[in-house]
Figure 1 (cartoon, each protein chain N blue to C red):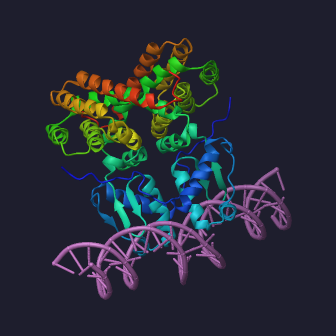
Figure 2 (spheres, chains in turn cyan, red, green, brown; figure 1 turned 45 degrees about the vertical axis):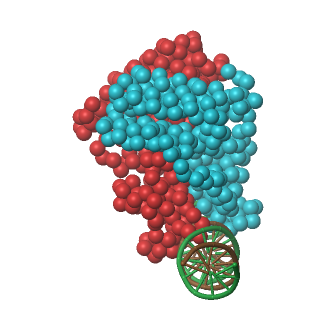
Figure 3 (cartoon, each protein chain N blue to C red; figure 1 turned 90 degrees about the vertical axis):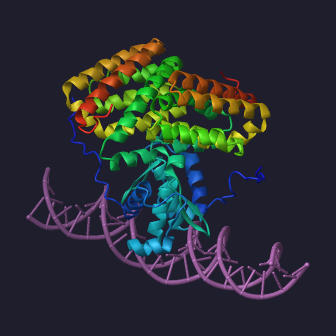
Length: 238
Length: 238
DNA sequence: TTGGATGGGTGGTTCAACCAATAATAGATT
DNA sequence: AATCTATTATTGGTTGAACCACCCATCCAA
C-alpha cells in the first residue's frame, strides 16, 4: 500500500500581483460596479492606482480579455463587456469562489445532472476496445486514491465519446469537483458507493448499453448531489 | 427600415505580437510536438527565439496559462499540460479553426443537439414574466438582422433558465455559430425557418411547456445541422 | 462642406535591470 | 555513507523609462 502523502490542494501558489489585480477588476465588473460598455481607466492610471508597474497591469488585462470580460482597443481604451453575453466557463469557476451563497454551485450541479449522464450514454455508444482497456485498468486498480480514481474514471468515460467537446466539458466539472472531492470521499459510505458505480458503469460501457450507462451515471450524480446539498446550509431552495 | 451596414466580421484585429506567439506555441502543444509534462524553453530563450521582448513572451504565456495548456512554476520553468485532461472550452474554438476536416465541427453540432434542447426545457420551466417580455420584444422586432435576432433569442432563452452555466454554455455555441451564421441566413428558406422557430419557441416558453420547447429547439437544430453538413464535403462520416 | 494634416491620448513593444522562488550543488554534520 | 544545510545558478515576477502604432478630435485649407 502506498504511503498517503498529505496533499495540500491549492499548492500554495502565492498570488502573483497580476492575479490580484485580475481578481479586483473582475469582482468590480461582475458585481455591476462597472456597467457593460463602460470604459475602464487607462493602463497607466491603473498602474498608478494599484501602485504596480504597467507591465503587471497588462498581464492582468490579458487575463480579463481571455475571460471575455473586457475588450481592448488599441489606441482607444478598455471596454467592459456584458459577461452574460460573452463570458466563458472560467468565469463560472471564479463566480463559484466569490459566491458564498452556494447558488452557483446549485446551478452547476443542476447542469451536471443533465449533461454528464448524456456523456455516459454517448460513451457507451462510441467507445472503442482501447477505451475499455484503459477504463478497466483504472477501475480495478485498488491502490489508487479514491478521488484520483473517480476523476480518472470520469475522464476516461468522457474520452470514450471521442468528442472533444464532451471530453473538455467533463474536465470542467471535474476541476470544480476536485476542490470538494476530499470532503466527499472522507465519508466511507460515499467511497463505497463510488466503487460500486465504477464497476457498474464499466460494465454498461463495455457491453455497449447506453441507456444503462446513462441511468447509472444519473443515479450516482443524484446521490452525490444530495450529499453535497446536505453540507450546504444555504441550499434550501429546491 | 434601418440601413444595413456592411459588417465585417473579424474586425481586422491586426494580430498582436503576443497573439502570434500564442498561436505558434499552441499549435505545437496540440499537435503533440511537445509532450505533456515536458518543459518549454525559458522565457528568456523564447524572447530570443521569436526575437521579441520578454514582456511580450510573458503576455503570450499568460494566455497559454489561461487556456490550461501550460503550467508556470516560479523559479522552475514552464510545463506543458495534457489538454485532454485540463483543457478548457476556448481550446475548442482554437481547434475548430486549426482543424480543416470539420471533425471538430461535427463534435460541436452533436453536443449542441444534446445540450441546447435541454436548456430550452429548463427555460420553459424557470422563466419569469420579465423573461417573456424581453423575449417578446426581440421575437416581434422586424427590423433586426436575422443573425443578430437569432443570437439574441438564444441568449434570452438561456438567460430564462436563471442558471449561469446554461447562460454561458449557450454563449459558447453562439460564439461559434456567429462566424458561420451569415452563410446560413443568406438562404431565404433558412431565415424563414428560423422566424417560425422564434415564434414557436416563444409560445412554448411563455406557456411553460417544457416538452414543447425542447422538441421545437431540437427540431430547428437538426434542421440547421443538416444544412451545415450539406456544405461540408468532408463530413461524410455519420 | 469637404478633405487632409496635426497633436494628444491610448494600447503595444522594447530595453535593462532587479526581486523572489526553486532546484542543484557543494560542504558540513552525523 | 547518509543526511542535513548553506550556497549558488537558474527561472519566473516585477520594475522604470522610453518609444512605436493606432484612434480620434480638432483645426485648417481647398
